[in-house]
Length: 356
Image (cartoon, rainbow, N blue to C red; front, side, top):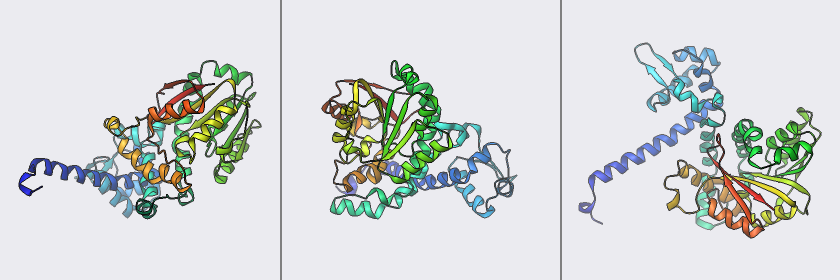
């Protein structure tokens, strides 16, 4: 291709597009800082204020706040009155970047950018040599996912998700056996156990840290019907034990998801239900062109979901395996009756109701 064959307008537009991506990437780091330090939460309740006033209200360093405000202002997140030297967070903006927004708080996602950057060298090496970056190289990932998931669980689990499964509330109220596969820090297990004291709940995860966190929360909540086990769910080893099994955004991370799904099918009692919650997407790149978070999810998959599976010699599904592939694997595991639903308040996931 020669220079004369290039469309100058298209080239200029693409340059601007890339500049926007780079600005967005760097601003994501600043959004993460605003989230973690509580700056967004504080500014949401403050009138237009100077950097000194914001520093006094938050107890944070004024010089860092001033530079952060420079990014927030030029990125059109915070508004600024230059004559008065004041800054404020409009209510329309705080609705999607403060903790008060609950599951709509997009600032939570910004933490993934810095976490992914920590393993870039390992991912580059995996591109060159194959293999992957092991889970042990992500010291904060489970904590970040726990925070993100808790927002969704607190807002939707009991009042929206449980009613998705016909008759489930009644079964849980009467007393049922329930397992959560890849439970992380166990917040979903503990919420359900608290709401349905006659049922018995167990959370499985291969992370000792996650299991310990689940047990600690259960103890703090005074729960006697929630237990947690450190376990490789590839070898679940249960037969017709559970009435209801859940897996919240954990199947796509598995090294051997087919074995896990077959084990789940075997562990369910006849007539039991498996609720698999996973990223709402299609299984081909072309069909995800209009997905609002496809670029972010493919990046997270490359830097975590896919690579941790490949590090264990696994299949490397990735989080964008999509509905078509998910249905294929569920059918292969023995689930012939599968219904896919969406939940208001959860913009990320599809909800697969799989009946045995």
